[in-house]
Image 1: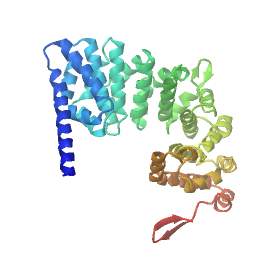
Image 2: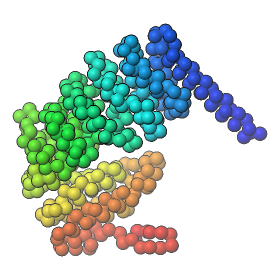
Image 3: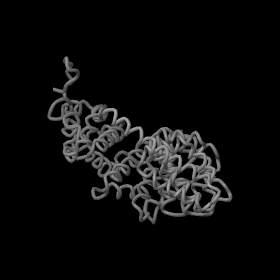
Image 4: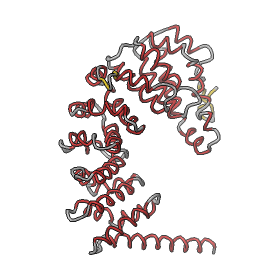
Length: 399
């Protein structure tokens, strides 16, 4: 009987949600524009943090209507902006939501919106585009389909700290491989983004830094250019070095270290340059400490492996820096950082992703011992020996 009551409650609550959702969608068709605007604003407040409501509104056809209102010439700028905000909120739900939005051709509609003279509306369109492009289900190619888009985005970089933050985030997510790097480079990405590294907004600095890491990766042309770029009288590598100091947030330290690593691997910075030996390498070793979060340790070890892979001297320096080899042994013993032990959700996440940690450690072991017998010995003996993996009935265990 209890089960029946529960089912009835569930069904009636579902019917209520659907009925209220239907009511929200119906108001978008009201002949009175003021009521339509109020309907969109109420919808915005109803969907924030409510994935069930988002899914219902999508199923009931809210998206095509919102996109129609967003593109309709008779719509006021306020209405268009509110529509863009609601669409952005729907995009923040599940990956299925994003797929539904893509199926309704949301990207061309939002890109068209960027031609508006109104800054608030432009920012709302960019925020929504950022949310959609950072979703794994969105093909990056959609940013490059129309050749006028990239130059227009470059021009919008000067408009506000929000346009800067969102556009840099879009670029860093949609720059996959040499073709994209070349398009962005040819449209002046380096010159347009470099001065954002001194922005007063941390988010802008951070997204600009991420752009440089994806632009420089395995790209000699970009990397050789970056070495000579001046920002406020300071060369870019010096700015990157400042950004990887210990007092900076971890994600900033890591991303700056990646920029310098990629420039070095692309041949733009020598492996014996002080900014690599005394700054980048020690910073990446710090990221391998068990104090750091799992993702930071994975990224730190993988980036360090990539940095030292071709260079014996860097391998030798890394092997004697800061107990690195002992820290790598901890990759097998402690999947969770010391600070995460009290957080049960975090602990669960880390145990599920522990294989990424082991993989990163093995990559770094391989790089450390790539070219030098002495280092190989140090890795295979001593405190830093990776645990021998022994097969048992229970599966693979560390000994």
